[in-house]
Image (cartoon, rainbow over all chains, first blue to last red; front, side, top):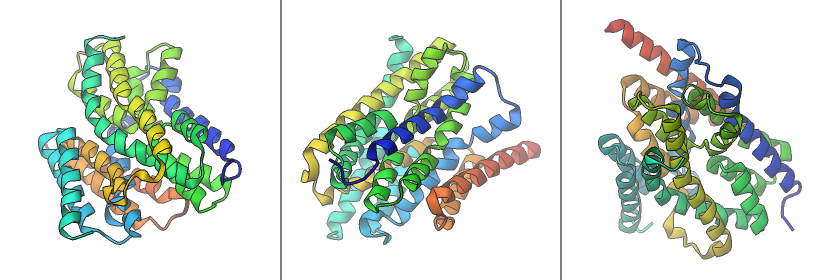
Amino acid sequence: MSSYPELWFIILALAIGTFFFRWSGLGLLGGRVLPAWVLRHLRYTAVAVLPGLIAPFVFWPPATGGVPDASRLAAAAVVLGLAMATRNVAVAVICGFTVLYGVQWVTGG
Amino acid sequence: MVNRRFLTGLKDGAPFILVAAPFGTLFGVAATETGLNLPETMAMTVLVIAGAAQFTALVLMQEQAPTLVVIITALAVNLRMAMYSAALAPWLGKNRPGMKLLLAYFTVDQSFALSSLRYEHEPAWTLADRTSYFCGASLAILPPWVLFSCVGAVAGNAIPAWASLDFALPICFLAIIGPSLRSLPHVIAAGVSVGGALWLAWMPWSLGLIVAAMLAMVTGAWAERWLEGQS
């Protein structure tokens, strides 16, 4: 049983749609190289999508009802700073969680 | 396929287990809270295999949003996969069709971020090298995600709120973004993306993110051209 009608329809639609997105470039373009101006734009794909995807979580965390939260802002700053400085993802992630829990502990959050 | 490059990919992808574990667990817990049973949760994780879109769908289902809105919004969040796929085409597109189906399934934020950075630094790599690396990185990331979704679905509500697992996703993405901010145009594009997404958050169906991403992409490319003209 499920609390939501048409759940399987949603799962399959998301699965098929997402897979098509993932396959589109590889399958339709093959090994052809796109024009320089297209490549120049694609170079910025990740950096154009991911910061915007997570910005609301950093500034308006759903877990606090959208109220900016010191522990999350501090953790985000530390992760980004360390990731930029060290390029070491594991170190950045571990230090980020440490700051997150540390600030929550200090502020009693 | 299992060779030196595969192992390099596995090693580069390994740190993301630290992220896939809490984030996957959180998805399993959230799906259970939304009312999905174990087979439904696992079907979603294995077939969709895109964390942000899975969470988006759960949130909208909790709000009893119309089916079509759930689908369109979650797919909008995943539209970036089409951009990843196009960006990977010059590197991986000459593979056989069957292999490309597998590589398409493996295309997630982390495997794309790791590979596109690595390929630019390893121009001597062959198609086989790049394919092996991509598979290695993906197999470090995807199985833990699926496994821990299952753990979360079974563990249910036993995860304490103080663990703040909601923030595993931002921490993961910030750790990916950091190293890619390697030039001024990248920093400018990231800034436009953040500003645009926050400013356009009022737009329905996550369209604000898509518009902000397009603005950021154009700004980054424009800044790169402009800086080239300066030097």
